[in-house]
Image (cartoon, rainbow, N blue to C red):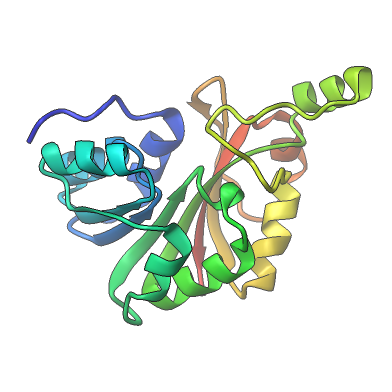
Length: 197
């Protein structure tokens, strides 16, 4: 298998949450960095969906099982319980209806893992206070600029419990949390959530 791009910090944090030999579906897999990491380090049977034709073809050329398709419609096509984990690695915030996507992911997988950019990080708050503008997303288009607390409320609305969450700052994971979000909401630039029904 050809090497994929190096994994980002959130993708390394996601890999820690995936159990050995799990069946994983990644929604919006890009060039396959996470899929490659999961297959190599966790022995996962990982598949991906990617809307960008060039990125999907690059994954297939590397030997990764990826389908080129629109994310929302492809997710609806999978049968109930087909995967152990469904992963949104900085993709949920760009979807038209993230609440629906979380409910579908809950149906398709036993657990859902989501990484988000935190719109309430202290640097983002300062930028908003002084310039009146939100901090742009480092990982692509962000249609839904959530704080960590906003995402926790969305997960609850989709009837998912936060089993574990890890804030990331400057690419380094902080202390995992599940309930107390105040510190993470201020100081985590991004966060990775493990959700279960």
